[in-house]
Image 1 (cartoon, rainbow, N blue to C red):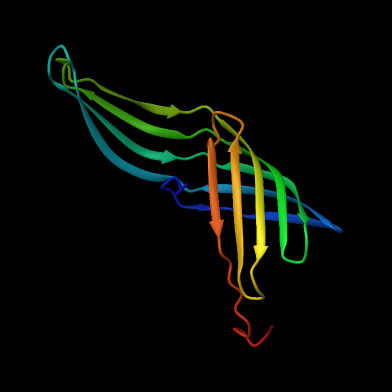
Image 2 (spheres, rainbow, N blue to C red):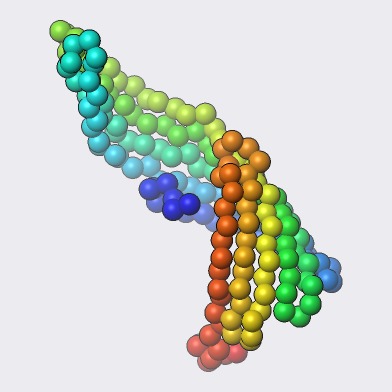
Length: 171
């Protein structure tokens, strides 16, 4: 996903418990999404009169969210490991200011108010594989399968992390 189009801040804390050859992990986070004034007007046509209904979207406050994940990683050998996990996101409702001008109505009435969505529950299963090619380069392949309607159906991520030795005078 490329994001929601709003700025946000996401503090989180992660706990790792090694139990050779398994490592258990858990993360708790809170995403703070920053409201923004969209100030955008869309026009639709009234089929009966052919006149437009103008809808202006004002301030939109995307819902904050609580993020929890739990899982385990299993080392297969010195270079390879796989992981399994569970992720849950509770996304608070989004609110938006809406004004409509009905040009088909002779009184040109302005209808205004706030719209509010339902909260979202995004639950996913996680699976991953990691391979350390050499001391400097690795490969991570991660899969995520959504279990609820609010989660992504399926996603795949490929990462190639690089380690830079002596970049800051340390190894």
